Length: 361
Ligand SMILES: O=C(O)[C@H](O)CO
Image (cartoon, rainbow, N blue to C red; front, side):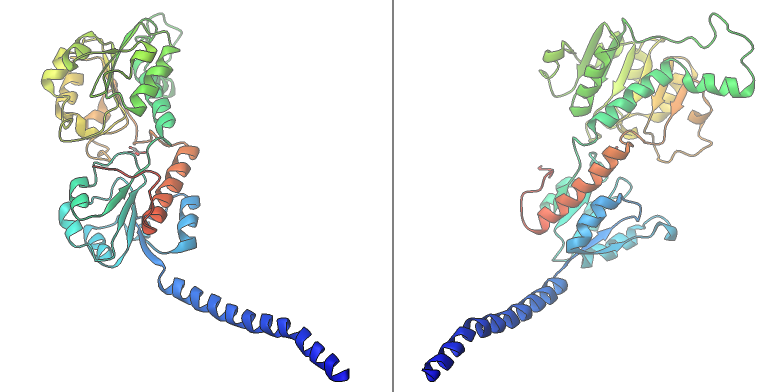
């Protein structure tokens, strides 16, 4: 009986012993797994140290980050060459140029470039594809912010907000004056939108609230305007007919410098030109001349060439030109969402999963 009891007691301890042994094994396994995953953590190079924290924190959980400190100055090409040899991924932004030569230096583990931008003109996408390197970008999350800024710039330019503000500060506001600081209004006007993708369409929808009379657009998308009554037209017709010409296309070899001297000369002398896309779409010298010679009435630019534009550039001297430092997507919400999406793109690519926003060529 007692033997039986002992044996029973012994047997009763068995699961415990088994559990303890397994627990030890489990602990060993977890430790070695942790060591392994630490050893095999993906190496990500981050091109500047002021990206929004939420996206960075997502990456930090799973990757070893090497972050370029801006106090060392802007990132050099040599540094990128050094980094692409030894990293698995790049987390970059607009100023970081990724060309074919650089991609040739990519090490065997390099898998993915994630840019915190919707524009891809700083990346040689075809060369990346050839090198089997995936590219993530950040569409959609900045559409509304950029469209809002476009409307803001349109009004700031046509209604001469910066000029009026400067005049007030200089003491040039002597009295209320019937025609002082007048400009064209949006109501009843014809708007021309060059590039009718996500941002162009959002700008068009917002403009309906201003009771514009017609919205013309040109670009590859021909039917997208139907729903809101916008009219697809050819480029020259858009320039000739519009009171406001808005650029919302991406910069590609086809759109490079499409706004040149000939095209500005087709526009109305009263028209306003607004660009929230890329400076490279415009022949800037031709625009400068058009503004100086009053071929067109004014321009509002959120992007130019180069960026930053030198502070003594002749465009900065013109009262009929409003310049903003590429802030189209600069709302807290958009920039944060862009940062998170850029991080999610990297994590997905490192796992060989579908990326939330991958550019396919
Ligand atoms: O391409 C982009 O994302 C914009 O130009 C910056 O937000």
